[in-house]
Length: 426
Ligand code: BJ8
Image 1: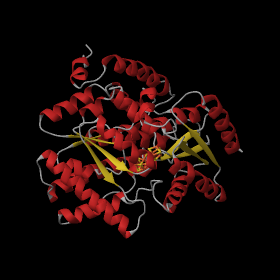
Image 2: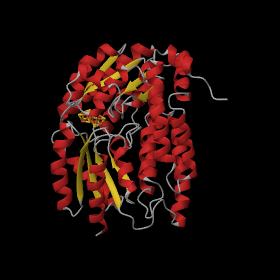
Image 3: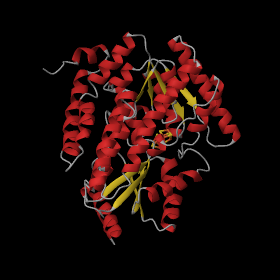
Image 4: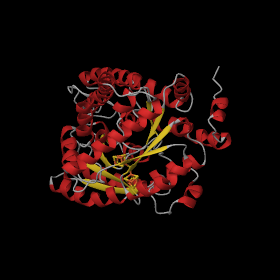
């Protein structure tokens, strides 16, 4: 008998009618997009289960954790250090919204020409349909792009508690010092919230848990380099999305199980598409759940997405945190060093990003790159030009797609992607 989560959603203050409407769209969209894919690895069943319970069982777990005295930390950015959250016995969850919801309401607070990601976050909050946001004891914002930076000034009134990280814009010594100071302030905020103190042992455990999770994603990324591709790009993206929601240890275990199955597939040369199918690396803005629009279009053409250079992808999971420090300060330094490697387009200059795109494309044996920019996202849309020129100069065909969460341009994008895939087929 299915569990009735409605009392829990009501207690969380959700608008049950609007929430029903959201789930009424989400469920069928997931079914259409994922479960109809041919030759899916059987171990993806776990992720189907997670998605079927994404507003149910996982929220119940968060509520149980809160009852047991743990605090839930909601995050919008790959810069929020989960290691510190775990070390203070917190639970971290992603809040980024990958769908349009209550756009008209959101546009009462934001200009129309705001990126879909920020508008989506506002829409979900204003319409009271996100149980993750409702279950968060503190929401972490960050000064990255102007949209987020200014948006949080308004968003703070929509949540009970907001902590904003002031992120650097350069990777200079001064930028590093700022990040170090901000992580110290973040630690102090969580210490106050949880009534705990950061210790070397707890921080080492937090680092180990997050390293294991990232290590499993690195293993998955390597397996996606095989031809024929053992897993679709849609499923690869799905795992990168669930990364932000699931219990970390259970997630690591589940990704490793998928990897075990993929290793067997690679040995047998079994894939989700024939060997030689065009291979595409997607690079650019993050794709939060349930934003599956572009990879679904790409894979309908018979091409395969082999990786994501994105914060919901390898930009977010690259690099492990060194755990050899002997003091809390040493370990915090190591955490800062790891996070400063994230090549977000808010950094200037940001040359390491294009180097990362190139090395990913080569390592994954991509035939071409599709640069994904959300409309009105200046950092990524402006960076797209130099990225495209450099990749084309290196002989990597590149296509720029700028879009939002709407469906109106699907036909037009499909035509452009099909032409691009034809170019890759030579
Ligand atoms: S570390 S990429 S998660 S800031 S799409 S809101 S940049 S206008 S999401 Fe990001 Fe952190 Fe950087 Fe990663 Fe602004 Fe662009 Fe919108 Fe964006």
